[in-house]
Amino acid sequence: MPREAPYLATADVVRARIMAGEWGIGERLPSRARLAVEYGVGRNVMQRAMDR
Image (tube, rainbow, N blue to C red; front, side, top):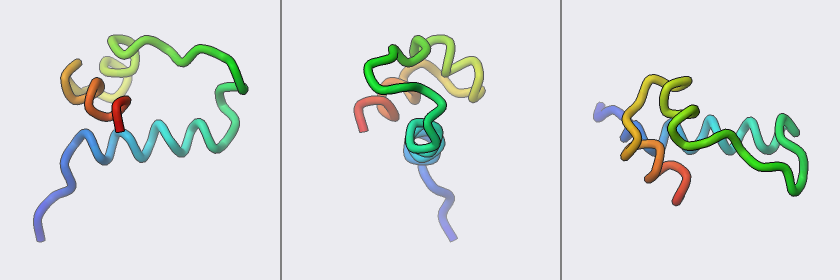
């Protein structure tokens, strides 16, 4: 079975954190660079995840 694209998996995790209320309404998310380091992905993967 093919593995899910890294940007899709990363987008799912970020979305789940938002839905869980980790970041409040109107609050800025951490920078893409910071999230990329946190998830161990490249900046381009994080960019695609955030665009999603």
